[in-house]
Amino acid sequence: MKVILLEDVKKLGKKGDVVEISDGYARNYVLPKKLGVEANNQNMNDLKLKKANEAKIAKEQLEAAKAFAEELESKEVVVRIKTGEGGKSFGSVSSKEIAEAAKTQCNMEIDKKKIQMPEAIKSLGVYEVAVKLHPKVTGKLKVKVQEAE
Image (cartoon, rainbow, N blue to C red; front, side, top):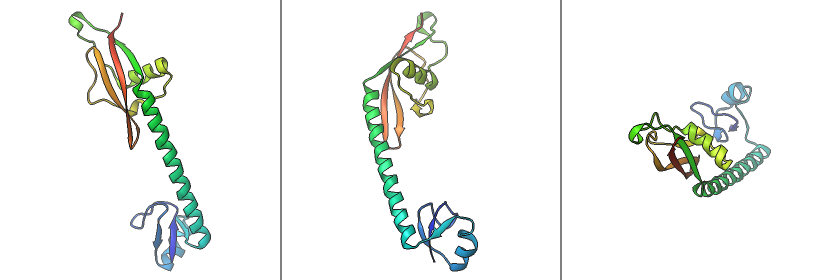
């Protein structure tokens, strides 16, 4: 019996896959637990429409991420840190501080978890920080670290 999986099933397949399984396994386990539905014409058409809709949404999200990345590269965020004698800093600039500065200075919502910094910023200067907006899109944000007054 052919079945369209509604959820991921271990050793069988992922959600949306069409798999061939024995009739008994389908009737006694997969169908009663709502893990899948029989692959008839109506359900196959529903699956095609669903996959087309998901592809359209994924494309729109990719386009939005690319547009946001272009906008992000034109912006610059200023973060101030306390420094001692000789420009030595107390602490470092974290992704949380960069996200808050982007929100207040540029009105841009950036998740602190998406800001990728190989190491903490511990000195004054201008840095480019990568922001992962989408699995295929990474934007760059200029961060200017200045001494706090």
